[in-house]
Image (tube, rainbow, N blue to C red; front, side, top):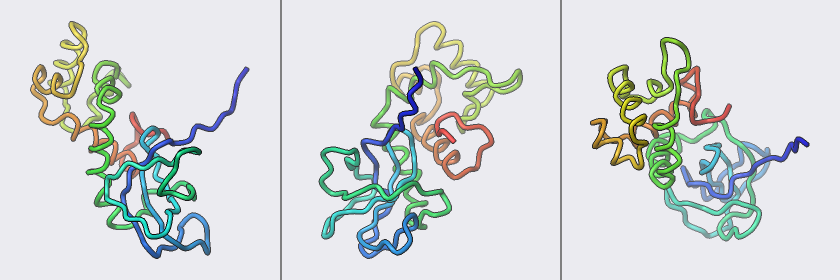
Length: 185
């Protein structure tokens, strides 16, 4: 039996906070507005915050149905274009925080990505990985899967793989890529 169950984010990371903001999602709605990115599905979200709360960029918030303390409700999804300038500037930094906080999930991509076409491998979509690094990654992972970003860096010589993955996620969210590997369309 197929269930058409919607999956919601449990946690989101703050991109920008507007103490007296106007909602982009719900016309006429005003209040403490937080622009955030979901941890699991990397969805851009607009949140209605509890009044008189402070938020730090990159702060992880509980937004699931239970256990919210600083958030009243999730107002809806945002497009990249609807983000404030500050939120757009924070996006690459916050994506890197998400990638590092969920290291095992993102290291798995180095172990699992496959060729997309006869001429293009999924790994090559990550900035900084060309044919040479791609071949090296595939060779090394076949012998022994990668266990951490440090492992990727030490064995392959790829500098700061977490930052490169975060850069790719930012490009996908901004709509700058034809093929997405991290963000579902």
